[in-house]
Length: 159
Image (cartoon, rainbow, N blue to C red):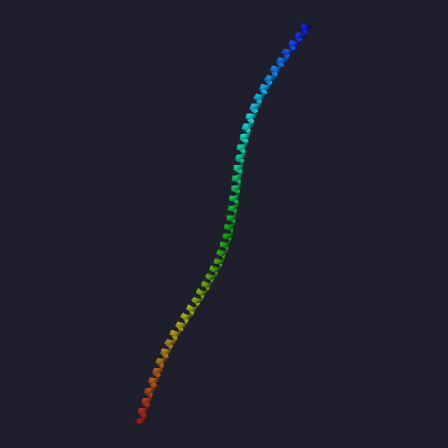
């Protein structure tokens, strides 16, 4: 019985030793896993930090781009306003130009009419001068005839 108990105790010792060795091996495996997981966690944390830096850079770039976009949109609005003002001024100038062109056309027409009237008056004046010269010659002829007639009558009366 003692021997049997002793064998049983030895078997239990062997089992306990086996379990102890297995547990020690499991602890070693778990510690290796822990080291690997710690390394993986460290690598992942580093990657997360890098990604966070990239996100921060992209966010900053995005904010700067949005700021530039807003500035460019304001400039675009200013240019649009200036363009509208310029277009309004161009239309006003075009209207003035059209009005002046119409006025010039009217004045040319009036000048042409006045030139025609002047030419007509010059022709009438020339005709009047010719008629006047003709009347003057006729008048001089009549006066000469009358003078000669008076002289002849005076001569005849004196005789």
